[in-house]
Image (cartoon, rainbow, N blue to C red; front, side, top):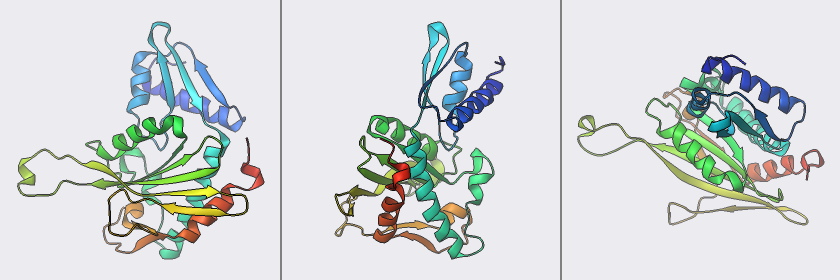
Length: 244
């Protein structure tokens, strides 16, 4: 491998991509990885930060390759959202997703209960980073037995109040609209939570389309209904994705 940290990162990402394409599952061990390269990986704000463990004395890097089911969940959700954006108009697209990490406005991530803390740290990194443009993080959590899907919406909350110009900018990430889709013996169920203690629990997920397009001129909303969530479950729990 190259000694330059940025070159090593690119080579590592290429190895991970090849491992996924070949169906590799588990831990990928890489030797002779410098501390600088590991730091570069951790600082990366890609759509999916690598799940890494670095062993400094031996300069070994362990990368966790996620289950194919994780990719299936993201694919299903992405398809539903993409269809709605295209119906909203020619400008309803994932433009900022394709122009580099610096300009990303929406992040999709997936994990399991074991990576819950890691996922939350990722969310806060993406949204609260001083140079971040991320508005929304959609987190998909799969339970260990793949019997439920929990969708968490993290939103950007900019500071409010007087004298903002005289204070340092600090953006926080807040959790809204958590919803769980569960697989039963004969059907699927959708259950919304109410983390903000609203008078009535939400029954839909509302996201400004401008979060996806990056255009503040777009005032319409993307609405994910209970029917959409049931469709997400039915797409995910087809035989092709029942891997375990």
